[in-house]
Image (cartoon, rainbow, N blue to C red):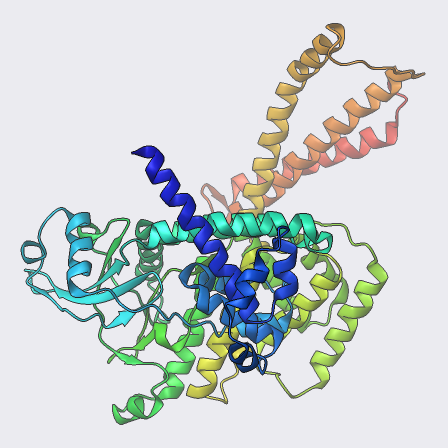
Length: 567
C-alpha cells in the first residue's frame, strides 16, 4: 500500500512539474525552461500551447508575465510572489511593483466542506459548537475563507477556516520549487548570488508558519495586549479578541468587529465622521506600533482597516507582521533625527549599526551618495510629507553599497507606503513628520536616560567581573589543550613580563573607571530624586557616592602618572 501511495505522489509531482513548464512556456519563458529541461521534453509541452495564446500574452511586459505566471500556478506561487515583493534588495523595483498586484483567484469551499474542516478540528458538530453558522463566506483568499458564526452566548465571531487539502498542495509545490531552484542555481551561475535555494527555504518556513493559525492567533493576541496595555490618551486602535477555545492550526476564531472600511470616504462623511481626525489617529496608531511597541501591522491596506463608530480604528488580518528589537527602534529614531539634522556622518553610522556593523567597501562614495540624498531631500517640495520616500531612497543607497539590513526594514518601508496612501485619501494636508517627531524625541531620550545608562554601566561591570573570574579557568583550559597537542603554538616574545603587567594595569584602570562612572550616575540619581537621609536638602548617599568617585578619580590619575615603572 505504501509503495502505491509513493508512486501516486511521484506521478502528481511530475504532473505538477510539467504544468509549471507549460505555464512558463505559455508566457514566453522558453529560455528558462531550456535551462530546466536537459532531456528536451519541453518541446513536446510547447506543442500543446496554441499560438493564439502566445500572441495574446505577448502584449504584457516581462515583469507582468512573471506576475501572471504566479497567479496561474495558484496559492503557493502567489504567496511566494507576495513574499518576494517584500525583498526589493533582491528583485528589481519594476518586478516588486508587479508582484504587489498579485490576486488570489481561488474559489471558496462549499458549506459542507467548510463544516467538515471545522468539525474535524474542533471535535464536535457545528450545531453543538455554534448557534448559527452562515453558509456563505464573507471573505475568501488563497489559503482560507471566513464565515460569520454566532456562539450560544450570543457573541458574533469571524471564523477563519483553512481550505481543505491546501497544506498538501503547498508542500508538494515547495518540493517542485526546490527542484527548480537547484537546477537554476546550477545552470545559471549569475543567479547564485540571489541564493534561489535559500529563498525557497525562507519561503517554506514563512508559509508553513502562516498555515498554522495558532501562529496568527499569537500575533493577534500580542497586538491586542500592546493596545490593552497602552493607557495613554492617544490610544485610538483596536484589535479583535481571540477565542482560544475555537482556535486550532486550521481554524481561527476572532471577535467579529463591525465598522466602515477606511477608504469609503463618502460613507464615513455620511456618518458625520471627520476623515481628518481618522487620518491623524491612524498615523499616531502606526507610529506607536513602530516606536513604542516594536511590533507592527505590515499590511495596513484599506481592506484591513475599519473605522468604528467611536472614531477608533480596528486592524484586521494579522498574517503579515513586523517585529523590531528595542535596539533597532532606537537606531531608527537616531536615523530620522540624523536625516532631519543633515548629519551625514551620523546617518552612515546608524546605517552601519542597522546592518550589524557591516564593512563599507567605499566610504567616500557612500558619504557622497548620502550627502546628495540629504541635499535633495531639503530643497524639494515634492514628497516632502512622505517618510516612505526617505526609506526607499535610503534602500537604494543601502543596496548599492552592499549593506545588509534586516527584513523588517523593507516591511516597514512597504507598510509605510501603504499607510501613507490611505492617509492621503483621508487628509492630504496631514504633516506626518509633526506626528512622528515626539516619538523620535522619546526614542532619543531613552538612549540618554540616566537610569538606563546606570543599568548598562552596572551590567558592564558585572559582565567584566564575571569574565575576570572565568579568565583563569579559560587560560588553564587553553594550556591543557596546548600540552595535550590539541593546539600548537609557536610563540617567541621578548619582555613578556612587562606586557602582562601593563595588561593587568589596564584591566584595573577599566574596572576603576566603570565603578567611578557608576558612582557618578548613582550620585546624580540620589540627588535628583532626593533619596533620604538628606543634609540641607541634598541626599547624603549622593554626596558620599560623588566623594567616592572623586577619590577613585584621583587614584586613577596618580596611577596613570606612574606609567609602567611601578613593577
